[in-house]
Length: 142
Image 1 (cartoon, rainbow, N blue to C red):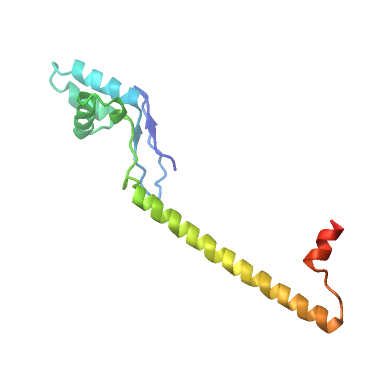
Image 2 (image 1 turned 120 degrees about the vertical axis):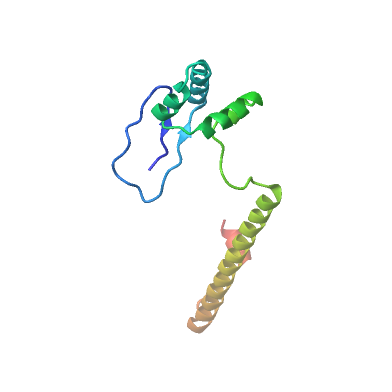
């Protein structure tokens, strides 16, 4: 199930089906800006910000974080950010080394299988008395 993206003034009807994993809500930059503007306009009226938060199903911490991001001047700070550890160059290098080691092991296994098949073909041709073409002969044919 995808995360719900809420736009400015667009009420989202809750889905009656309960998902196995809860989904994190995602808010667009425009939506965050419009809510902050509406909250600033409603400062003078008692209870207006609470009504706004209830109507939009938001928490006061949302407003706090969005205001901090706006005050830092980080417009990108209002965009949804990826959660979890940030990719580091060391981690990327370690992953690449792991991938290359796995690929190397796989290729060694394939080479060993190919050598075994070639050995079996040589022995079989020797037993049956069939002469196999050598590399020099195959290059002359080409």
